[in-house]
Image (cartoon, rainbow, N blue to C red; front, side, top):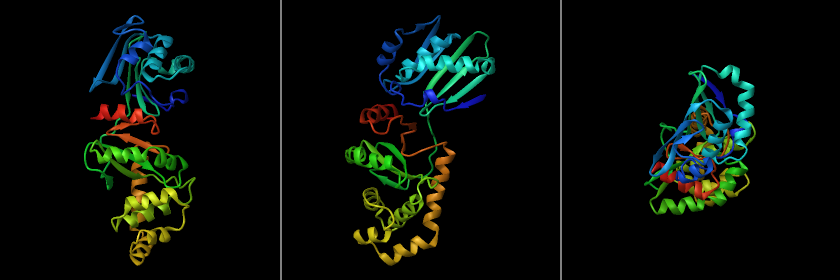
Length: 287
């Protein structure tokens, strides 16, 4: 299988996957029969999980199918341009296209025909969850960086709602370190400090202070929480906490993650971590 990665015109959030299928059908203007071929949908809990098109290879029709499945305006024309530029290298192949939050498989092995499958990115093994709020429901895993301004935006705008849903037992929040030290010089130090707070049972209170404070005064934040300063200072120096942070960074890289915040709802990569209605849709998909 040949792989292409992250086509630029497909990098925006998916809108239809995880939503009821009626929106997809309306956007496509068809149901089972389309463009001389057929459309098949696979649902989970009444939500669109996978969309398939099997029929003649027509870049325009396939582009419209993808646009209907993603809700991304302009995708059809962009796909036609991309296909025209790459068609010679695609014929006779089974290709996996990695998008920002979904995978597209194109089966072009039968001359003049295509099988296309669009589905969300799905991860089976995240490794252990160590910093968890709640203990019931679907796991919402947040790969984050304390120095990332977009992570702080998520903390302000979305985390309070997620915490309320966790209190209701609908979900559990798992924080995962993904320090982007290449652009954030304090990211590793801040994550290490949070690990030292975790050793004293205070990860989440320390997390909240870090997300609201200038970085650098890590011992001062520990003092504000009443933590044992001697133990905290020793932890910052011994290297074990930093090693845990870097191990989580390696796991994020192994998953192919490229930025923060990156959020998974259950096994599914969330296309837009700032919209509550998208969380609701993916919670139903993952339920």
